Image (cartoon, rainbow, N blue to C red; front, top):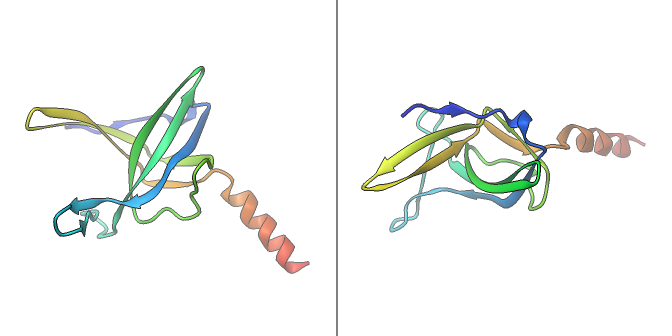
Length: 118
């Protein structure tokens, strides 16, 4: 099925609701899911999307471990897509982003480097 791009600029806020965790491909063996293109371990992050007076939590997959993401932290999603799926009578929508990072990453890193040099 086709992936549908999502315009994240339409949301008034995006907050980490569940911290990053590796995705498991096989529960019996504990084998982790990996990205077919990069070979990186896939991670899942619960993100609360807010728009107007509504909010929804979605699980977003990303290749590689997102760094600096903590519970309750505002986040930024790059290239978020939704992919409808169906398997054995079950169906849903899978969300994936090219990158998940803290919204305040540039400001906090520049503040830390200024403090270290003084």
